[in-house]
Image (cartoon, rainbow, N blue to C red; front, side, top):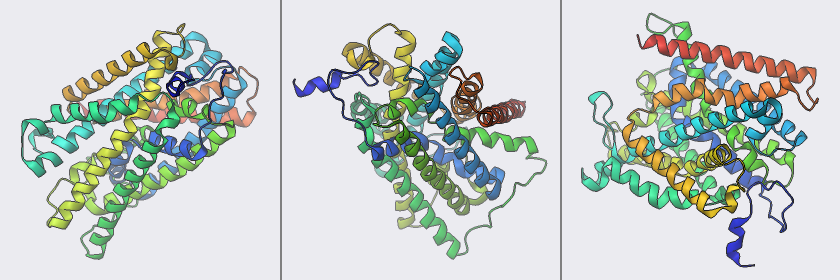
Length: 434
């Protein structure tokens, strides 16, 4: 068999393959899960500390991370009790065709929204933006001046063609473990430099004492606090990649271990960047902390650190992109071509979907100027369904008869909390528009 034949091995074989597939490693799964989690959430966490205060934000990060761990355990347990190997398949076993479609639509909305969001962020970092008429130059413009070749459209096109495209052509999640490892490292660099800058400012007496608890006044009501919940929910939503990553591992229990390690790592990263970002910029912190880093640093060294922070984050996002594209492409294929052979075995269909998704993401990122519409919408709707409502509903439905009384109670509480907080957040955001 030629070496090229390996690319035609199914990602998630329904039947025993004729050749032995090399199992993914636990470490590779940890990197892939951690990269799926971190994504764009890291840059929005500091603003939640400004809204909630340090203590409530810390508790919320811990609680949502723990609930995410519980929901993954629910998903994997019911998956291995049935015959399906996809999220939509597990929903189909519990709720029929309607359940499968609901899961597929939520994955498509969440992931496509995130991919567009990532390209918008990359465009902001490289070529700047003009929110409400205020000009923020990108790194390329600050380095080389304003030219046609560092415009938003051209910079994103080069990024999509020469960085995104080669990565999204991989047909196994395990193949992305090295890029995911680099992505996690870049996130740590982002947090490390931000922390060092905050500590330096603290020693120089340039920081304000952060609020431990929320401050309610005429501008901030109790219900406004709930708008921070969808941001953190979105930051911990990775359930669309649980099955693709989990079924490339040798043992089902390894996926639970990988998720727990990744959740602990990402919760620590989130809280660190939230605390130090808040210390660094105080109440002037923006919903997108990267905007704060393009302000005047006051020295050449400070400007260099600002450039490194922004560039490391942009590169991190570029390496997260293929992981979300992976599950998005698989779900679209399962939705549109349920009777066709597995996607990895059909080169024409694989390339067609890959190129169309890249084109749609690119064009939408050029047309849409603001990412926060995505954050507020996704965290309150599709993301919360994938992370908490659907896994809880599967447990309560219990088609395999394996749920305990404790499982059902936890699932019911998880669903109620998700529905109530999302409803309040959506209502508050709508009310704020009028």
